[in-house]
Amino acid sequence: MLLVMISVISPNISLLQTLPVNFTDRILLWDAAAEIIRPNWLTGIGYNTSNTVLDPYTPARFNGLSPHSSYVRVFIHTGIVGGMLYIATQYTIVQYISRPSLNSTDAMVLSFTLPLIFLQLFETFSILGFAHQSIMTALALGYAIQRIDRQNWCES
Image 1 (cartoon, helix red, strand yellow):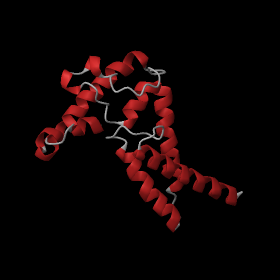
Image 2: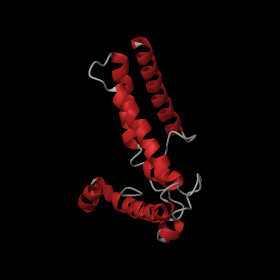
Image 3: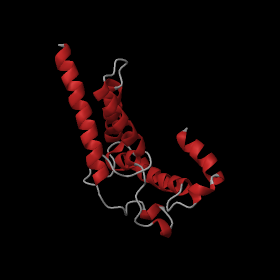
Image 4: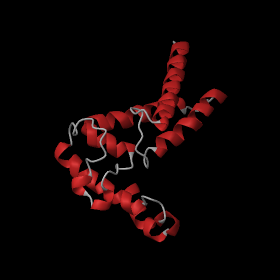
């Protein structure tokens, strides 16, 4: 649904066309990623940090580009098994941390964690990398897990 909405509105937004990789180009990159995922849907192609995996499926001007989505990248490398685990991990953390009775610390953790999870739709960093965004996301999710663990320990 999200991809359809992006493909419909992106040609009409001129500001987005000035970005180095606009939404239309991302859809081309995501289509190339789908070509890689289809034959390797269960376990992926294995973890590979090279950005050249999309090159055979994209025009020359895209050579060396990543899929510009952490979720798509995880599905490329780990297949449906790793991709669903990656999504489930982040969903579970957000579900536990966003309960109705938030205290101020949990609200702060949630307000820091949600944008990082959303940003992974359009950027390639993940909690498994060494880039500063990856480290910030891993720390935010780790702190959220620590908060969940502490809450569960206090309740039992």
